[in-house]
Length: 97
Length: 272
Image: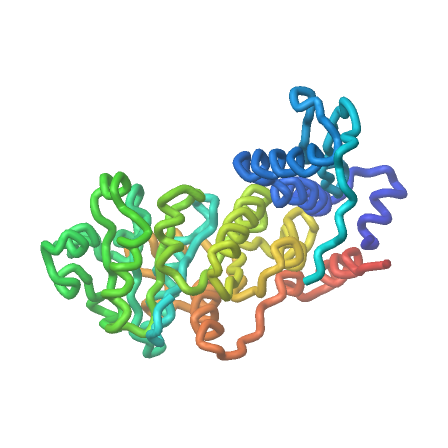
């Protein structure tokens, strides 16, 4: 914080417009930069569902995978309703490279 | 992209009207007068203007279009500047070129130009669509032009992302149309605000300068006639830095001496 910002805050004044500009830019760029194009997003969604579907039976209609940006962090949010756990899944030994 | 020693530099910004073409014209002339054989290529086929800023609009016979179609030789299309023979322009063709031009076409044109020049500057169109992608396909490195305004910085960020995925490197920044007084009173994004956000090295800092408009009116770039206006000096320094010479950047917050300037600086001192 600079002296100017401090004084502005103490006096309850509006901050300098350059400061506002910087904060607004940082927010909008965080969102822009995390923006996956729709094709990639769809591909990722399908692959995630495929993997999860191996272990549990999913309600594929109700599934939803999206990117959500709040404040400065972007999160991948998946909402996948499970019908039942598959009982035919064998525990896999991790492949040795 | 190519094995030759010619540097092919894309000049782009995303947003229109921030000074891409003005920088291309002035940097081209500045490099040429510093002894560098320079070609400037107008890749803004839709809205070409580089010819006008260089004052070469009446000397165009053939364009990139005829060169690609094989209707003329490259030397016939390149327009050499009379006062600065180290500089030549390859004019943009008909706007209808946009319908069929492919990245490979741009690479072909640049491939033809490269053997005859040390530096090729490509003036990219605004936007991030096909026109920009075609122009970027032929470039090894890039100069991103922006102004200290939110829209210009945001668009520059988009363009930088696209250049990164295309492996264009290095990418350097020219901050254009800086108003020192507004920066001093913190009513304009500061230089480090912009460089921090875009995370690019700063190649040049150009102050807002009315002489730029005068020179555009005449079709004589500021760097052509030894002008000592702030923008002319800034463009010449960009040319020098591009060749590896170390030239200090001006500090917009220290443009005026005196009590008021000192007060302003005190107000901007970081407390924590």
